[in-house]
Image (cartoon, rainbow, N blue to C red; front, side):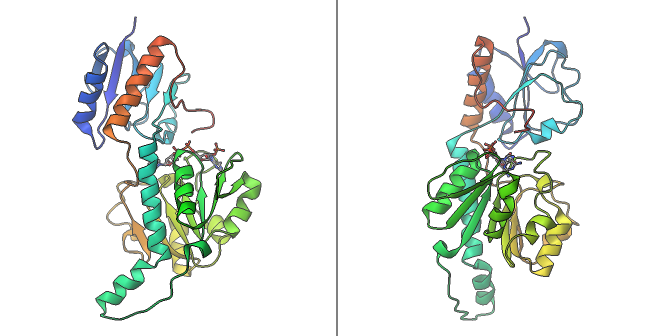
Length: 311
Ligand code: NDP
């Protein structure tokens, strides 16, 4: 019987994650890349990131676990093996950290923090009337684990909140839009747009000129999705023209963002290094261990991904 797990986890937790998995799965043989041994003996893997083609030699692989919410980077591999089941991390604390990020930057832009930071530098008493949250129309793209909690929290502190998803949803206090046909109406009413979509063939390049043009003049974009959602040149144009007043971007097409990128020095563009949320060490270990147990027992898996839909 094949009974080995391959772990390749050069993420922020490094060795602690490997040690945690070994401790949680004492009955399993855990092999750590690059000491994979005979690749035919591996049937489960947990991988943070991998180069294209990496999984090709593992001909008996049956289950793959991500260490986070997104799985787009694995599916983009043209050599990704067919028929592998894939699981990801879904967890309230993980989503709550993302909601913290969304609230931080929504308040930052709504309350125009840069205005006051700049004024203080000039020793200027630059009084400004602040709009009430109830008059600020925020819109969240994506109503999954991340988008739903963020939308609920935004509505909870009083923002006029809407959300947009693929299929219809109901969320208390949130005006819900669904499908491509309702996207324009969602954009027309949204002055702070928050991207919490997965990267799929239909959402790629969604943060681009046609989307920005449908939002009110001087809108704001906050993106904690994926770099593939963003067309950088269109973002720069929209910021320069004033179509967008400001943006906060957490994920970029090339990461780390190259030192020579013009984005670093673009006025009103705020950059964070793909850190909007991270699942806790305990959550990753416990979820993975439970999925390994379920897989071995032939039970339904936690958080299984629809690899056809791409999320
Ligand atoms: P989920 O799979 O739980 O939810 C995805 C949501 O997006 C669903 O509501 C889905 O609609 C909606 N959606 C998918 N495709 C479309 C489409 N074509 N049009 C409209 N809506 C669509 O994802 P999570 O909430 O777990 O995560 C979302 C993304 O957030 C991740 O894929 C990742 O890219 C990003 N992320 C980034 C992090 C970071 O550190 N920067 C950390 C964690 C996540 P429906 O409900 O109808 O299916």
